[in-house]
Length: 349
Ligand code: HEC
Ligand code: HEC
Ligand code: HEC
Ligand code: HEC
Ligand code: HEC
Image (tube, rainbow, N blue to C red; front, top):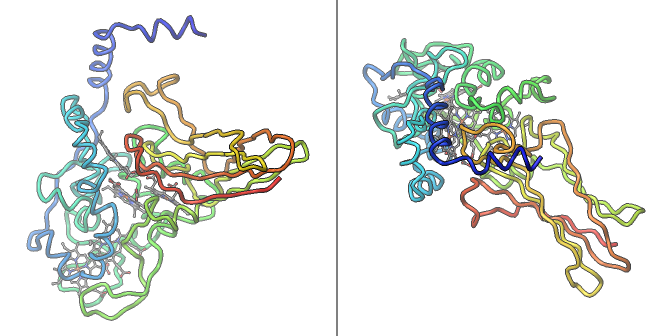
């Protein structure tokens, strides 16, 4: 095995660089569609009238997708310069032109104006022929085109969310993975978990009614992370501590994104509180150069697919003590100092 791997590792830099440029040149460009603007309403006008929805959306990472902490770190670390030199399209899904007129399987175009609004109302609701929605309102001061994609959560998932959440890399195809999952087959959609129903108004001083939230909670909301975790810790007769994690509550890989990981640290302490054993397992994606070397050994995907379980097994010493499992979530592989500890299990033996 080493014999096959070693020559790869000592590939001279120019050969590697040449390979990367070639791969880039052969790659299909990400999406192509004209940007649509409303003929009479500015992007910011939607936010003024639709205050209650805008307030939810401002807390989401759709709004913060170009201004949030992760992009700031990307800029600070110089990654965005590298990406622009390599002509990798990054802002396409993060500050997109509209998505409703796109063909299936394509990604949006980057837009040129108001990029700081990220994925906004216009990105999702404006089509070439006007504002589209579920068609529930009767008194809108603008045209409202009833669209099946907003009425049927399954269609919304496959025809709206999928424009950005089903990336070209196989391991990042959240929507494809969800369709094959138990939840996907039972009709529990992206909207059921990420656009939960709330009772609230849709416009400033409007009356409250049941509609779906635009807060889009995800992995950055600790309660949401906990809701997705099904983990147990047991002591077996053979004196082993076994942590089991089952991904049966999420509907896509855990974690979904290729940049994040779930880290489980198992610690064994003896009766005198001394640490006698410690091990850590990471479930996520390791890529040497994201998007380029998408095959083993440069790409290692250890995320837990929907419906599957993973076990971490540790030997326990003689006598009494405690075994613990700490669950951490790392929200972007390049940032290691912000891990969120969101769950912990302890068992005496
Ligand atoms: C096809 C659409 C698409 C393109 C193109 C794209 N992204 Fe993303 N990006 C997403 C989606 C969707 C997410 C949400 C997390 C996920 O499911 O991967 C995301 C998340 C992120 C995050 C945040 C991760 C987090 O944990 O919040 C960063 C940072 C990021 N992308 C950077 C980039 C960079 C840099 C590029 C260019 C190399 C890029 N993106 C290109 C769709 C895209
Ligand atoms: C990521 C895509 C996305 C973004 C961004 C988005 N929406 Fe929506 N919106 C949806 C979907 C999907 C629905 C349909 C939800 C449902 O099934 O009821 C919806 C529903 C609505 C409705 C109808 C609510 C009802 O039940 O009557 C209004 C009004 C609305 N959105 C306004 C906005 C405004 C204003 C913004 C910007 C602050 C916005 N949306 C941003 C996807 C989006
Ligand atoms: C002058 C105020 C105003 C502005 C500006 C405005 N809206 Fe509306 N919009 C409304 C009102 C009022 C309704 C009806 C609300 C209801 O019945 O709950 C509505 C309804 C909607 C709906 C629901 C349609 C449906 O299918 O039921 C969507 C989607 C929507 N607006 C999106 C937008 C977008 C996108 C923009 C910006 C391009 C925008 N609105 C700008 C006042 C406004
Ligand atoms: C135009 C592209 C686009 C569309 C359409 C879109 N998203 Fe997103 N979404 C993104 C990007 C980009 C991010 C990552 C923002 C970041 O973390 O920087 C994101 C983030 C999220 C997050 C939060 C993840 C986190 O890290 O907190 C959730 C949840 C989410 N999207 C759900 C949905 C759902 C559900 C739909 C369909 C109704 C949808 N999105 C449609 C681009 C899109
Ligand atoms: C049964 C509930 C459920 C369904 C269905 C579901 N999700 Fe999630 N999703 C979660 C939970 C819980 C998390 C937090 C754990 C995680 O990061 O995987 C999450 C996380 C996410 C994230 C943030 C992940 C990251 O690593 O940054 C995105 C983006 C996302 N989901 C998009 C989607 C999309 C798009 C769909 C539909 C194809 C969908 N989800 C369907 C429950 C669900």
